[in-house]
Image 1 (cartoon, rainbow, N blue to C red):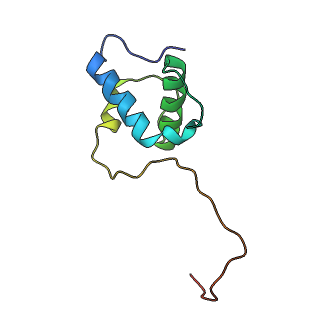
Image 2 (cartoon, rainbow, N blue to C red):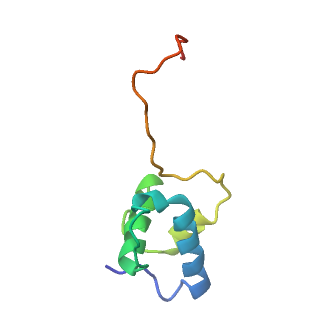
Length: 95
């Protein structure tokens, strides 16, 4: 699977995209397992990001995806692990 539009994306764009995906899509991978950086893992995270933002899910780092990455945003990851503790309640109703 191709992950780059090689005529439009520079090495600095690729570095930026990898850092962005590390910051906001790291939870897609098990942090306890050492994983090599590869175009396959990049493509997988790109597809997840594209799906999250309603883009065509192609796994390519194209100019549209890169422009979306460069938009200002908060520092909260788009995907994260959440745990719930069932059964504990302090009697307050939260609505």
